[in-house]
Every structure is written in C-alpha cells, then in structure tokens.
Length: 189
Image 1 (tube, rainbow, N blue to C red):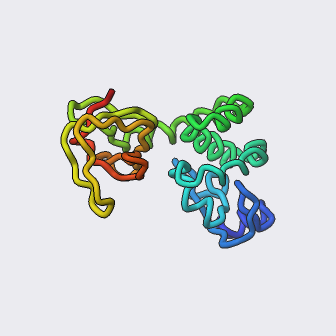
Image 2 (image 1 turned 45 degrees about the vertical axis):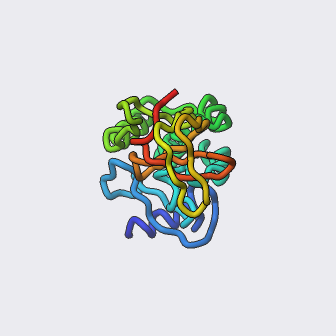
Image 3 (image 1 turned 90 degrees about the vertical axis):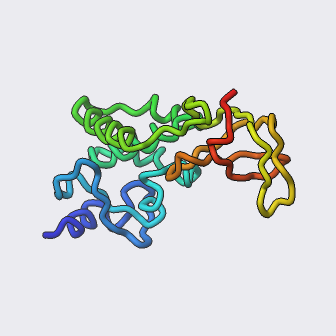
C-alpha cells in the first residue's frame, strides 16, 4: 500500500489539518523517513501555507480542532504552525493548551530549529536585526514608484512586516500607502 493510500484511509479522504476534501496531496513532515507516520494528507490551501503560515493567518483557526489529534505528525505540524504565528495572540493561547509527549515535542522543535538555521535575519542599515512589528526610520529620501510621492528622510514606519523570502526588504505604511522598502535605507528605532 502506498503512503498516499495509507494517508487517505487514515484521514477518511480529508485534509488532516482543516478537514477539507479538495485537492489533497501528501506532505512530508521534516525530518521524514518516507513513511505515513511522518506524513500528512493536506488540501492545497494548507499545503501552500504550512511552511509560511503568516501568509494565511485566518485559515489556521482550523487547528483549534486538529491540534487534539492523536497522530504525532498532526500534533507536530500544529505546534510548528502555531509557534510561527504565536505573535498574533490567539495562536499563543492555543499553544498554551497544547500538550505534546516529550518525543513528539522534540520532533516538533527539531523542525523549527532547522528552519531557523536556514532563515537569514533581516537587518537595517546599521546591522541591527529587525523583527516583525518593529518601528524604523527612513535614512534617505526615497521616491516611491507608482505612488507619486517621496518617502522623506526621518519618516517613521511603524509595525513593519517582514517578508519570508527576502531579507533585504520589509513592508510598511508611509503616507497611508503600503509599500516595500529596502532595509539598507532603514534604521531601527
């Protein structure tokens, strides 16, 4: 029996995180050994954002039910997702309720540590590490393409958003417009 067949039988042909029945595929939970025990059956919505859950925050309210699964692969994935978006508040409440057996918790943390090793920190012009929600100051007048204004030197940009795939840019609001800014022109406040 193939891994996918095992997962479909185990899950009743439903996504193991959100219970959707649409466009299901196998997702291997790091570190995978190729078995169904270390894999999940996920819908395309979960599959697209499981590794970067901040892209689709509201979708992860579904973990309120699936985090109670008896399957370690589901528990590990729920833990990792909630941990990555814990800064939103409600996921931290769910994490506080989640209990994992020691070996399952070690597996969950192992995957998070591996991801943290890969991720490069986002740094400002002075080399300070920027975090989600920080405030920064623009250090040079910057013409904003397509918006018809210049972001002036000294402008404060509050509550910045880090981009998962690009440590050289952040997203923030200047003059009420959401724009992308190069970190080389920013100073952490």
